[in-house]
Image (cartoon, rainbow, N blue to C red; front, side, top):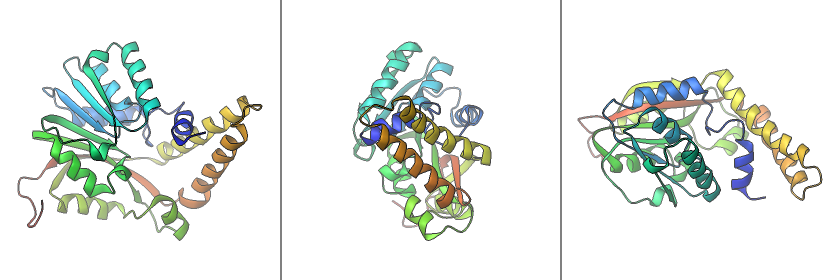
Length: 251
């Protein structure tokens, strides 16, 4: 089974692909969107859940999403039709890092997708190229909430602690105007939902050709979480505005 299909099954019960509950998603969108905003872009949108929720709440809003997962985009189109917002949503099937700059978006999102750009700061550079004057960025990124083991670093990459993560963003020419650190409940619920949904699918299809592989994947991912990074991983969302005075030497 390909990676996109495994991801789709894993997120059956948690369509937002980040450790955030519905109240947190709603609050972040409320803080990131202003009343007169008209255009939103999601770089690495997956099933476009953030965009669908924003469109449902704001009838004047128009949105675009970019992702490489064709199945996720197809689900997003169906969901947009079901919610009556399809005419205001454009989805692009391509690598978000290769999406040509289209300035003029009031809000650019990238939640848990910085790997597509090679890290946090390259993601912010890409987002900046799409912003309208006065626009904002809503970004979600992991951080170390403790001292990681070598195994945790192997699994999740070269993250920094919370304060250092924010310092890097500020030094790059951004000012945080709101933030949310995922709670332990949100973090645990996300992991249990993902690997539980994957395991449940395998148990529901015992005779299927992919059942053993999917169950093994669920077991391996759950073990990586519990034994590798549960006690040291955190997740941060920031609403950012470009700082008026850019640091010397910045692009």
